[in-house]
Amino acid sequence: MVNNRNILVNWILCCIFLRTAWGSSKYEIDEFNLKYYNLTLDKELSLVNKNEDNVLLPFNITRVPGTKESLFIQSYIQKYYNNTMENDWDLEIDQFEASGYNFTNIVYTLNPDAKRFVVLSAHYDSKLEPKGFIGGMDSAAPCAILLYVSRFIDQVYSQDKLNIDGEMGVKIVFFDGEEAFKEWSDTDSLYGSRHLAKKWAQEGVIEQIETFVLLDLIGSEGNHTIPTYYRKGHKQYRLLNDIEDAFLQTVYGEQTKKHKELNKRERGFLSMNQLLIDDDHAPFWRQGVPVLHLIPNPFPPVWHTIDDDFHHLDQGNINKWAILMCEYLQTRMAFPNE
Ligand SMILES: *[C@@H]1O[C@H](CO)[C@@H](O)[C@H](O)[C@H]1NC(C)=O
Ligand SMILES: *[C@@H]1O[C@H](CO)[C@@H](O)[C@H](O)[C@H]1NC(C)=O
Ligand SMILES: *[C@@H]1O[C@H](CO)[C@@H](O)[C@H](O)[C@H]1NC(C)=O
Ligand SMILES: *[C@@H]1O[C@H](CO)[C@@H](O)[C@H](O)[C@H]1NC(C)=O
Ligand SMILES: *[C@@H]1O[C@H](CO)[C@@H](O)[C@H](O)[C@H]1NC(C)=O
Ligand SMILES: [Zn+2]
Image (cartoon, rainbow, N blue to C red; front, side, top):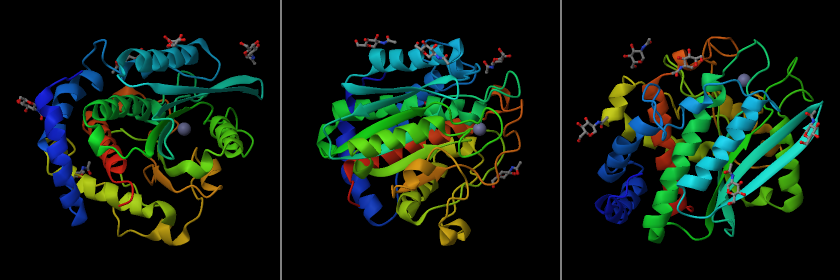
């Protein structure tokens, strides 16, 4: 982990700059964050660089609920938070049995006493069929990105607390049981998210969620488009769109051939404002939570085939979403009301 004082002290300066920048609806990715990405991405999210800090390669296994591979991943995630975070992250384990399987949602919370939370989520389980299905984009890469972003915001929180709004907290959710075992239906799918949404409704957490971000089918090769789906999340989509514009101007933007995935003017889904893609956000969306669903439409061609493996992931796209999520979260934590 980087512990370069200069980077961190300068975070304070950059945030002042960022406020001005976003005020005029233009976003800038500051040099100090870029330096952080430069020092960490290649180690932590690389498809080829095998080392103990790599958080992506451990997900290159099947992760069917209740199996030993699933238990390995659960323990891997917990070890990661145990061993790399500087701040106290509160652990919530939501475990239950349904349809003859054991499911385990894992939630880590930074600043658990906060009044409001930004939720970042992905599912860590993989499909039972086809046999040996890995789910590189569905959702190995999104889970690894969440781990990377957690460490980033943990550092910001340690070093730049002045620029974090004390009323804001972060919840990182790793859902189990997103996939259907047989045919997708209301009762055979979304086991984890349905259970957690119900639990959080009973506990009053639902009302505290300011934005629920779900990453799914992210990190695969090829050019994709990710439209804006919901009116309540559109303001957040616009922020992310501005961040993407800034990203494309960086050296990392070149790794993605400057292909733009977001398009705030394409309003087809927005005008319908309906649940057309069933996914882990659905049980939360139905309770009125503002949702930012980050999923390409159309789905990438490897979707639910044996080809959704690590060979069909794209390093540039993985780096991109790691950076976009870091920038997004830092901004949300600094200026929750803008
Ligand atoms: C990372 O930094 C090194 C050294 O400054 C530079 O040579 C390299 O091009 C940078 N890479 C990226 C992707 O920014
Ligand atoms: C992922 O695992 C498969 C099967 O074990 C292996 O062939 C492949 O090289 C691995 N991919 C990466 C990027 O490590
Ligand atoms: C993480 O730390 C907690 C508390 O110290 C401990 O109970 C738990 O076993 C640890 N988990 C792993 C997977 O290391
Ligand atoms: C679920 O876990 C419990 C406790 O570890 C175990 O007793 C039970 O047999 C498991 N159920 C299934 C369906 O694997
Ligand atoms: C992807 O998008 C970039 C930028 O728009 C373009 O240069 C490239 O040719 C596209 N690649 C494919 C395979 O369509
Ligand atoms: Zn899937």
